[in-house]
Image (cartoon, rainbow over all chains, first blue to last red; front, side, top):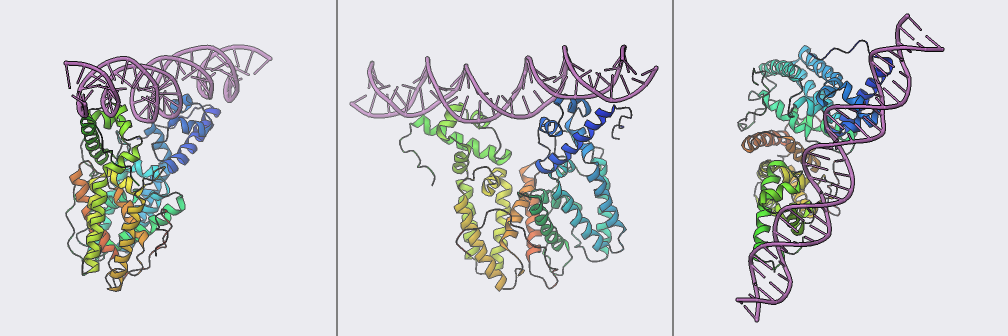
Length: 211
Length: 211
DNA sequence: AGCTAACCGGACGGGGGCGTCCGTTAATGT
DNA sequence: ACATTAACGGACGCCCCCGTCCGGTTAGCT
């Protein structure tokens, strides 16, 4: 899926590549995906040409830079799925996902892929969503998750979490943590929940053959 | 506060001014505050100079363009405050506020004033926040609002609501409506709410003297 | 050491947004 | 009807970002 890491790069080239990725990770996290490519190049101490040579497009750079986060994302849903208590697992997924996304502004944008041409995180996202759907199903059966919960609510929650922007990362994480707790409270089954307004189709999030 | 509306504008000038405001309202709502000034001018059918002559800065334009929303915002909190049942009033405020913000992407940005130099909505915002604080106090006393609710939670909710972005306005409003319902569920007092993570200071939103 | 190819980054032309200047147009009052 | 003057908008110079080309540099191999 992702292009093979070129095996026979010269040592300086490989070094530059790493520095570029480090810079990209740092800047994407703090500034979001919209940082100018040149800013990344400058921060990495290389020329623009070098950056474009290794990563012709920002999407390729982002895809490469966010593999760690993508792995973490997968680990989170797997952990939640493996938890003996589905409701506990569900809560864990929400908490950790919110924190993960709060830590990197750019990752959320990439994951959401609200961008012109979607980064090919689609497969990973579909996997995560499917897993969570399964988890939600179990949590409903256990009577802890409200029955009218739908998967779109989780996407709604993710989109909402993205809106939380503060000055420092620490403040953002703290705010996101509290937000997650509130969301969990909202999702919890309760004898007295009034009916929810209907969902609207949000994003082409379903693993469809669209295109 | 806001510059006086120039009394002695020539008729064509006044006409242009109105068209500019209409265009600004439309574009701010759909595209957000970041639309180029020239785009607004083009959409209004005037030259850039005319736009800049009437509204030297984007903030002034936004301030003028969003007076309706601002008025609506004030009306909402007043209505909520006047409601005999404080919890019912609180819910109304949340629902209507979410919808109002869902309808205009730009208004939220202006209201939040996350921007370089804050638009002088600060006074209005402070008024709204103070009113809601009072309302929340009553709702807590009535035992319907969870006791650990703080005003920052509402700001958190607004920020989160801003994150909801969809293709159409209708979808955004629908999503926002459901979001509001979930938030209300989260805020409702419940025998079984686990303690919330601590809040982090979010924005310099705190009204200076009051409280 | 010396060669060669891989690699580097400064520089270029294009595009777009910004705020302002100034020559032209037309609304207004007599 | 006509002078006056407010008002208009095209055009200018500035800055920033984009993606690419090309002459100089250096790693790596013999």
